[in-house]
Image 1 (cartoon, rainbow, N blue to C red):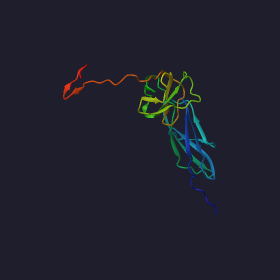
Image 2: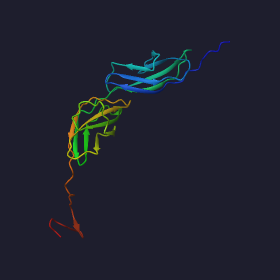
Image 3: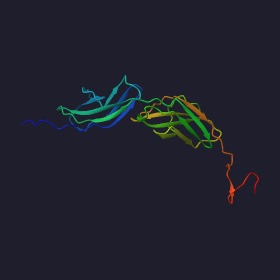
Length: 212
């Protein structure tokens, strides 16, 4: 008697999402099933899947700053289909368009406008350079800032040196918009002012200027 295979193949693993402002791409580790034949891609809850024999998928002409559910199922040579793994693929968010910096001693504090929608922000990345920033190629972040914050400090700076900064947005799919939007600069200076004292009292009596 011929035995019919009715067992669904193992699921794919380690899906990784890439994105631009208008497209998403997904790569994954293949199913470990020996009789794997292909994969079905259900984009944005569509009933009819796209079938592929590769471990990559891409979709273009999408809206920026938008989340799209994508389910990937494994299909074996017997036509059995796995339950599937669903990922949220998010197109890139715009980087903050408003950015300012306050110089402090040995550091700078940056402030920026929040990216929208806030629910799709994973975090922000601050970049610094001693030359004006026009491209992020080869650069690594100086600081990572939580999604619910719009201020951040960069420490370890040399006083008297001018630094240039830009901030990028990382979306919920961990895709970063690496275009340079707003930039700003700051020159940290040593703190040479002593502490300011006020409301001094002695035995309950206020001490004025020149009092002993």
